[in-house]
Amino acid sequence: MREDQYLQCQHFKTINHNGKSVNQSIPIVLAVDTNQKEKYNNAPALGLKYQGRVVAILREPEFFPHRKEER
Image (cartoon, rainbow, N blue to C red; front, side, top):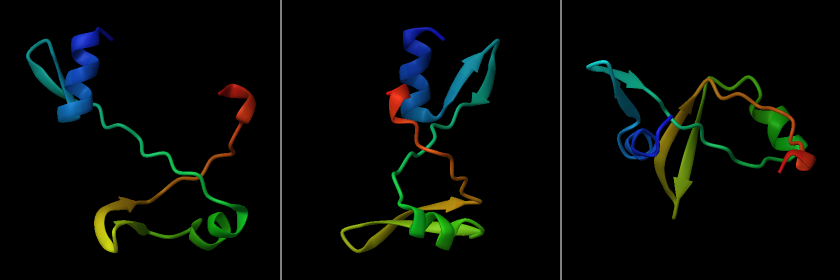
């Protein structure tokens, strides 16, 4: 992916490829502990709050192991 395509994807969540708009949503990555993971593992949706206000809804969230050695 070229740098201009990456910036376009970051700001508009799509890139133009051969005249077509292609969805390139960026994943939201949040650290959660084991208790939170177990509590929300089968949740159909989660709300993300900022200053007490819901600003985003994650539908069908997925949880993956955190591998510190990959950072």
